[in-house]
Image (cartoon, rainbow, N blue to C red; front, side):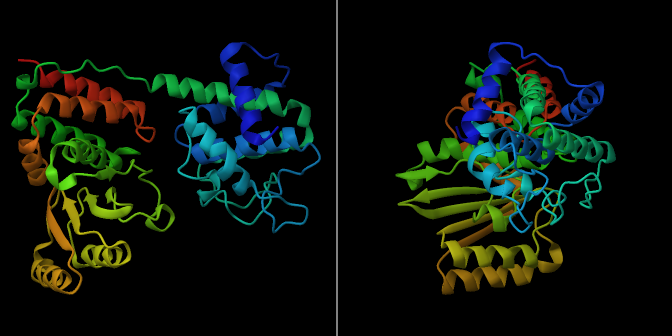
Length: 367
């Protein structure tokens, strides 16, 4: 049995019935603490799950030695990347983009002993995590119970994140201007909360889901699935927040910025990506527009790029561009339904984002 199969087996126990639990109060308290942070400390949850599953399958392994650089160590990150994180994603449970070990505080080259030097910011989470790792390492027969209870907490988070929104049936019931007012208010009120930076990307991705099907320019094109917004450019290996492919190559890329003005620096970074990925068109859209002091230099760079490379680099305001594209969409009601579906089903957005969108969504069709 591999790690994925064991994780699915414990998950089935969570869904199908109850497991006999005989853990001490200390372990139950630690699980409760970590359980309350599953959504905001996904790295810790993922790493603990990986270590627990690995201990079940390899009882003699010291799971605190989570890197091969340690004597008698193993690669926790490899196990996670290959088996755990992909399975958590399949189950729609809280997960990282690729691995819990991409979290800087957890990838430090120190064993997960009780005096672990990695700087996990939340002291309660750090203490509970290390104590549970120590407990599992010393009590391999109880590892199944710990992972079972942690998965129960994760399933609870998943269920809380299910928000139902009534679809808009009458396309004429919502005007473009009304939607623009609502979405601007929503983004500005939610952006600062953790995960909120993905909202403008989701909104514009929804536009492209329609454009790719309706506009001749995108014949035979494929819209790439949205990645994790917290993934760095180096890790994601993508040309932008949104990518359209044609014949297996990047055809068009869109980079979205919220309350960050388009500067020469941002344009230079985009030009680097253009030379690497060779799209025919590249957008940088910002809710704050272009930095006035950089406009002339940006214009010059855009002109030089088109002459030397051929890519059309377009810098513009997020809201004017969104409004323009909405005028091209045949059924505004369907577009808003797609936006709602994407917002309430995104794994990076918190339940507060989804509930707040539901409340604002109701105002769209009200008189």
